[in-house]
Length: 103
Image (cartoon, rainbow, N blue to C red; front, side, top):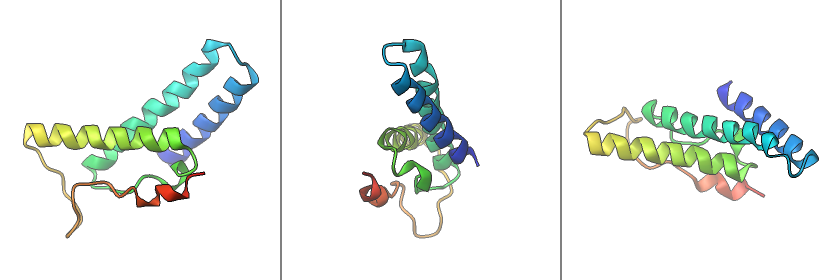
């Protein structure tokens, strides 16, 4: 449900920013949605989730934010010597092959 909420907030913020060009206050919710997507990527790494949420595939910025968070968490885990539990046979790299679905 968290990914759906992020996607909805991002869509609403993007529309509002487009309707009010030049109003920098309209960008704040957009950046907040991107921060939430990045945090979700970090949480997904810790939980062994390797695929970005499907509802991010048509929003390149959300997909990039999720991957940034995933990569950041992976880097921190590597530096600190911590590992996460991956599904058997899975590697420590997120699968971004589905990004071809992006417009």
